[in-house]
Length: 168
Figure 1 (cartoon, helix red, strand yellow):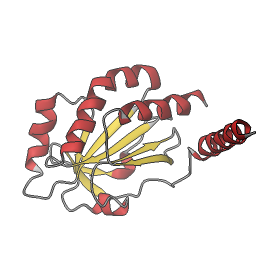
Figure 2 (cartoon, helix red, strand yellow):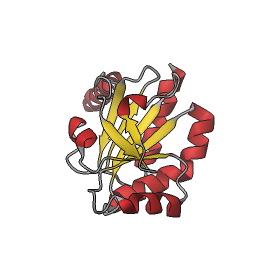
Figure 3 (cartoon, helix red, strand yellow):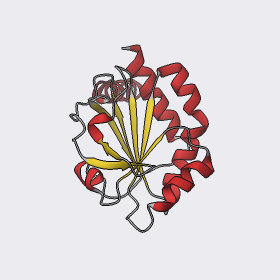
């Protein structure tokens, strides 16, 4: 009987968690920031022709952020091929340290789009208190999943989310 109760409880929570995985967190706000070359960019331009989008908030001084983006960078070409994903890495470095974002991205060979949010206007609107914080948008541009912090292996969870989004 005890095994049955444990199995039922595990099944219930697994079903509940799976059903709750994709939540409608709304759309991205329209905020003026800059791209890595210092050109104006509005966050309403973050889209991907009906395919998933990943938005990662990071900073050059944040070790977990660097680990996350480097791990994602290793998988990014496969994600593009398999899921058609587009990734935007949004630096929340302040005006003094944001100049390092471009050299950091180039030095690490990141192939994804890097944006600058030195006043943290976009970050604040997305309730990013401390990076890293990652959001995944479905093909309609709705935020359906978010993750705070980073631990090695989290990028595999992101891939599972992308896989489920593209299977729907």
